[in-house]
Each structure stands twice: as C-alpha cells, then as structure tokens.
Length: 402
Ligand code: KDG
Ligand code: MG
Image 1: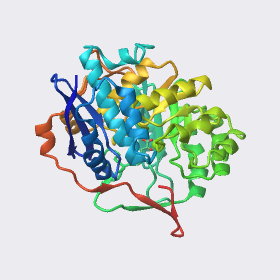
Image 2: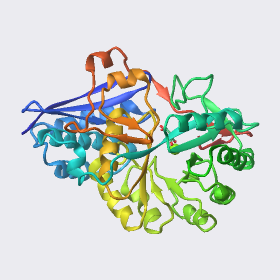
Image 3: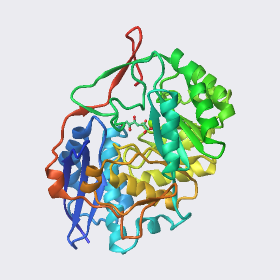
Image 4: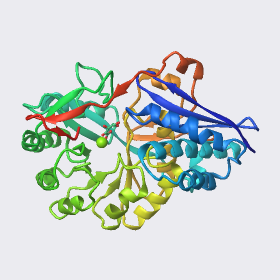
C-alpha cells in the first residue's frame, strides 16, 4: 500500500477545525485532527507546504518511521504547530492501518483493558446555586464525574463560565476579548463552591476543578489544602508548568491530586513532573502531543510512576481526536479519565462518529479504524472564520494567564 495523496479540510461548523485526510492507492483513507485553537492556519500551512509533499509514495504502515522522519527530519523540534501537524499524520496512519486490518483501532494498541472510558462533564454557573444545579443536571444525565466552575463575585468573567446562556465555548470569533481576573477573590471563593457542591451531590460523585494556570505555586498549594475536605478527583493546571519545580511546592503542601499538561506538546514537557511524582494525571493529548505514537510512549513512561492519563477533551479537539483518545483510553492500562465536552449537533453532523455515551462512560465503537468520518460537502458550507481564545488582565491591568 502507498500514500497516494493528502489534503486538508478546514471548516467551521460552530467552531474551527483542521482535518487531514490521507488517501492510499488501495482506496483506504485515514483522518487526523490538526486543530490548534486560535492558531489553526499555522498548522494547516505547515502540513500543506512542508509535510504533505514528503508523504506521497510512502508505505502508510510505517507509522513509527514516518513519525521519526517528521520529528527528527525537520531538524527543528517540538512546539505546538509542529507537533499538531505530526499528530494529524500519525493518527491518520493508525486509522488507515486499523481499517486495513478491518479492526477497531484499540486492537492495535493492545486490545481492550476495560469495557468503557470514564469521562467527566463540564458543569458551570454564574454563581454557586447555578453551578450546583448544573452539576446535578450532569449527574441526572448519567455522568459519574463532573468538573465544577463558577463565576466569582467581583470578577467580571471567570474561566469556564458561559456568557449569555450559551454553551461554554472558549474561542470567540473576531479578535481576542479581554477578561479581568483576581486570584485573591478566586481563592476566597472556590472552597465555598466545593463545600456547596459536595453537600448537595453526596460523597460518591467524582469532582474536578480547572484552575487554568492562574495561580502562583504557593497560592495553588493553599487552594489544594483548603479543598482537601471535599476530596477532589483532581485540581487541574494549578500553575503554569514551564518550571516543573513549581509543582514540587504544591505537592509538598497538599494531598489534592494534580492534573496538568493540556498545553504540553512533547514528552519532555512532562518528564520531570512524572519522574518526580509531582502530578497524578497527564493531560497532554493526542492532537497536541504528537499523535498516538508519541502519547503511547509518554503513557508507558507515566505508568511506571503510577501517573495516569486524563486527556484534554474540550470542543477544540475534534471528534477525530475524541475517537483516537477513546481507543487509546480503552486500551492502555494506566488510563485515568477522559474529558468530555460534547460538540454541537452541527459539528457532530460534519463528523459522523461511532462513539457513544452510556452511564458515565464513552465507548469508541467496534467499527474498523477510528470510527469517525467527515462529510466534506457539509464541511464546505462552513468555511474557516478567524477566532481567538480570550486574554486576561488583573484588576490593575497587568496581563496574566487566561
Ligand atoms: O483551547 C483551550 C481550551 O481547550 C481550554 O481552555 C479548555 O482548559 C480547558 C479544559 O480543561 O477543557
Ligand atoms: Mg483545562
């Protein structure tokens, strides 16, 4: 089998997605997601101009060799644009191989280690009462794990809380909006949120919370400590992770489990955090971390240190990435949890898929390959629209982490 051609489908069915389609001379094709929220066209151009010409004529079964060719062969290493491009190729090749063997992708990754993939939902509200209500609604839908975010009194727009009653979607069309932030107000508020959620929803529900990189290490340590009575499943991205040692500070002060890595793009971003056991869950996911080939190595390394996966799964990760993550999560031993922020009905229509939700778990389906396709005609009706993630400033105007 040979790669005959490859092209990109850039579309915006309610939000932007970049999808790579690799075609073979035997009629089998594979899909890969190359979406990098707010920087989509950089990856599209990297693929079209620099990667696709190198793929033509190659044997699509040589997944490892092609990964190494694109990673080492570029000379320039790492970075979200490069690694998302490599991931798109890698996932499309795994899709082709599993289709060629007429088997679901999870069978090529070791086979089933479990019956379903535990997922967590997003609950949010402008205040505690709304947030509690939203958690309860997700429990009623069958979720066993829920992330709770709430508006903070005196903070104009908090991370994870939708505006104007629409479902939460971080990227906004047009130029970046600006929001205001106060760590002091947030720190005083969050323990009250979790006290209310825990007492309303009982002990058995897994509760999660995303700090979104907004605290200093010692502030995060304080929050983790104050949340201990509510035994969270995890506290996510408590502080930026460029300096791994920051997580040592947090770890030394609290037993609240820590998840990080949704912005990582290389195993080396996670290496010190894992080997020092400063985190419990790795969030680097397939699309931004270099594909299934790269994540399998990272997950196997993490397993030795009892670090489990907790892959990023917001709406900017397309159904192609979601399917890949579900096959991956079904197969590996040290799977922890998968984020599930459902796509809109229109996105689901553009990307017909076999994965299904049942009683708190997603299952990737039993069809060959990833079990996800793209309706190119429908996609063409929704062309790319420039969109950005917001930026955040402290109350005095200083730019800070969004
Ligand atoms: O593109 C950025 C979003 O995916 C991110 O802000 C969402 O933090 C996020 C999460 O945990 O889903
Ligand atoms: Mg997050």
